[in-house]
Length: 150
Image (cartoon, rainbow, N blue to C red; front, side, top):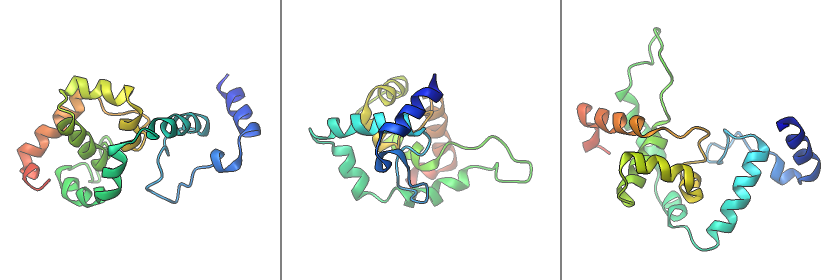
């Protein structure tokens, strides 16, 4: 069924909607297939017409500046390897959303799943971290003293 939907999408949608520029790291929705990204993009455009303060924050804050501060917290960049980390910038953005909207960890998880402007702000992650991952990240920030730098 998904193959059929994607074929229909490919045939009936203009190329500007079909293809994602993977060379541009700031482009949203890299983790979605083109049909999903088209639908989310279309929904977000309708939502953003009423104003999206998160889009303004996205433009004004250099989120990449947080990456080198957070990266040293993780020790699985060794030959032994380990499970890949959740993107550092995504985790910082989650904590920012939590503070700005005064959300508990479980409520943050619910809101990220339900609010298109939150998803857009986070870059439409395919699988947003659950509330325990957010809690563990916040704890790790405190344990390493990195919270004072962020």
